[in-house]
Length: 335
Image (cartoon, rainbow, N blue to C red; front, side):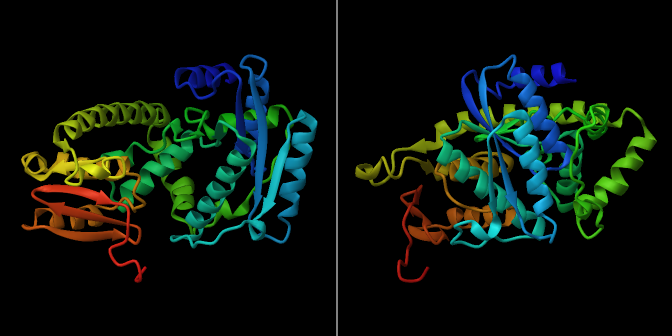
């Protein structure tokens, strides 16, 4: 199994030689397994390994998680960075469910540790069942093709070496080698959609056909290949509809202006993809929702020159059939 993970890492170029990798360590079976596997792979790939643990302080006995993480890292001679949520320097609020809030807190913590330690990447312990859960969550809530491709092996500086490993394989390995881990009993609570899918939907699909996991992975791979092709197509089309902004002296700040005649001559599907791509390339902070994109498209289709605020720090300017994204509030006094 470790050889299988190594091949996945090499195929996706997840861990470059001489890099510094941070492992998000919760103390649960998945992250403990990931830490052990990466520690073993240091014999093959030359990289530095550091663990990072965030104590959410949700349970009165959460100190036990910290103790297990500390003991594990000490035994493996791996440095460990720990912090409590109450110690984080956060001046902004997160939206969404409790689960999303916890994820955002961890991401903030990992990004901070990565910067402080000048690390290259952060390794997360998502596995095949996590992929299946993510797929069905997005399917139930309504998703684009991009959403249904679920998690990627590498996104920004985050890597996921275990995406083709089953949960049963992880538990078998830990139990065989008598390795300790913490069980988070909130994972059994039906209050969370992910738990209901994990405990009810996926087991039934596996009963219906014991090839479900294998065939799911094959299908997901095809979806991801389709999405990669579309991304290349969108990049090519974006080059065709991009023009120098109507304020050439600010070309460095407003790098991407689009020709609206060329944009709206395309298929509706491509228009939506190109708007997403435009926002992404411009590094705009926005929520990926169809409603948000449709709002922008309605504005762009309107005749005349005008501005439209899409975020308190960003707006879209439209003039002479060119549209550009402006990194400045329309009304600085009303944020």
